[in-house]
Each structure stands twice: as structure tokens, then as C-alpha cells.
Image (tube, rainbow, N blue to C red; front, top):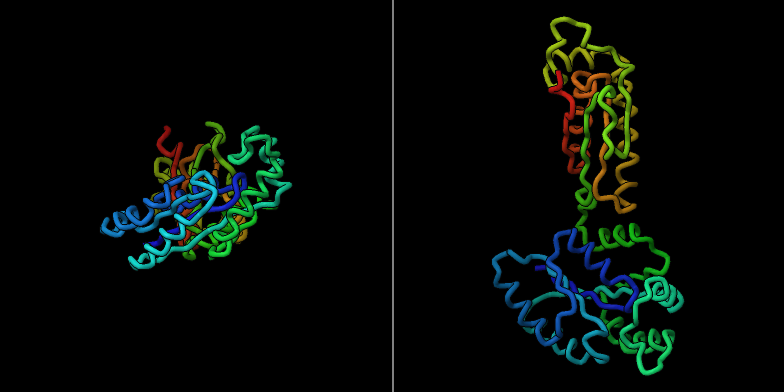
Length: 286
């Protein structure tokens, strides 16, 4: 079982970190009281694989000292439950700026204490937790996408490609471009099977149409360029935190050329290790 404890400064991005871990398959619990952590871990360990990846968020909301947390960690060690601590922090200036933008109240900003004093008090209180952390992530200069990429690097088990799904959609320009498409490629420059009588009523999924399309040198050259482009772009999109990429492949009617190219491109993307699906939006339109 993978057991991660998320802690850190208020306003540093713990909630976003927890959300990203949840997207990666973790079962996430926010603000669990420290005395309940060992009992929860025991239930997870007895869950027969149901809770293989668990992340708990604990922070200053649970109290200004962390003796209870350290007692819980000792109990986890005695139980044989391995854990890792992820500590999320940011500069005082960054946290103050975020609180002013969101107009939220810092949990320690009470009794006339300034926001800067509250942040510093929290930083001091969390020092023992930071010293125990396996991972320390400073979000001061990280965009949301960069934070997600960093967590993928730390907890993705080398499966970063699986963090983004790719949907390749064939369509006919005569019916409009798919509004959800991130990238659109026009393949109307390829020879058109529509003008071959025996191919007209078939689709790009049929071998005769596919052979017709790919027998031309320009099709093979186009696929080489398209595959090289995808090899470059896909990891860049993953690094920027994109979770879904939609690629539109269009021809005139969406029945022949775009369908054949979509099938080939989806197969190539799957071979690269990404989750790829194909959808032929206009293939059955007569």
C-alpha cells in the first residue's frame, strides 16, 4: 500500500496537490485528525487491495502542535505501514499575495495578528513536519500545470504518459470542425477514394479504402511528419498538465481519408504508450 501524508503551509497548494493525487488514483482524505490515522491505515491495509494508494492531508487546522501526528507516525511504523510525507510550501510573499487575491482568512490570522505574522507562526509550527518530509515542493514559482507535472514525477511511477488521454476524431469539413478539438489537420490534399466507384460506399476502416489512401507516397510522407510532430508534442502537453487532448482529422465528408488517417494515428499514439481512442464522427453520414 502506498501511504502519503500531505502537509505544509496554508495557501501553498495542499488542496491542489491532493486533487492531483486523486486524479492519479489515490484515495484522498482531507484534514483527518491525527489520532485516527493509524486506525484508517489499518482499515486500508485490510481492504484487500481496495485502497492501494492513499493520501491524507493534515495541517495547522488540526492544531498548532504536531505531537499527535508524530505519535500516529510511530504507530504506523510499528504496524509496518510505510508512509511518505509530502510538504508543500511557498514564500511568505507568495502566500500573502494568494490570500489577498482569494480574500480568504488564514487559520491563524486571529486576535489582531497580521497575515504576515500568521504565516510566519505557521511556518515555525510546521518546521518539525518539514524536517521529516521525504518530498518538499515549493510552489512559489509553479503554475498549476507545473505542480501537477512535479507530482507526476514524484508519484507517477514512471506512468506519466497515462496521465493524459488522447482522442483522435475524424470528421467532414462540410459538417463543421469539432468544437472540442485542440489540434486540427486537414487531409483533403490526399487522393479521394470517393471518386472510385467500388470504394465510394466503403469507409476508411475497410481495407480497400485504407490501401488506396496509403498506397500514395504523399500519404506516407504526411504520416511520417505527423508522427514526428506527435512524438514531440505529446510529452510537452503532459508536462504542462493537460489531461485530455483532442485531435481532429478532417476530409470533405469524413468517410474515407480522415477515417483511415485517424485509425493509423490512434494506433501510433497507443504504441507510444499513451491512452488513445478514436471516434469517427461523420463516417456513417450518407
